[in-house]
Length: 111
Image (cartoon, rainbow, N blue to C red; front, side, top):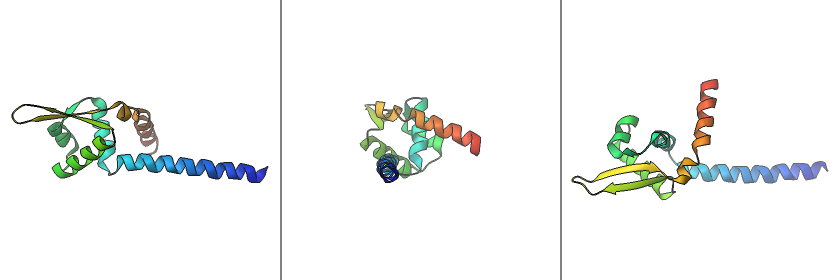
């Protein structure tokens, strides 16, 4: 019985680690959580994100592209002169709300 229980824990650990790795691959770099946190408030233009996060243009562009490719962020280009680009969370991106709230709660308790 004991080895069966240990075997179940190992399978659970492998599944858990695979899921965590998958989530971390989606988030990629250090800016992803902060971008998602900003977009949690609502749709934002590129320059609004740039100012709110005090991030380099290249880092913001790279992070937004990655989040768009993984289905977390939606990009909407408005045909104006110059082009206005807005970003918002997709349904998949909004699904991370409980995770961000748990991180906020954990941080307020332990940091």
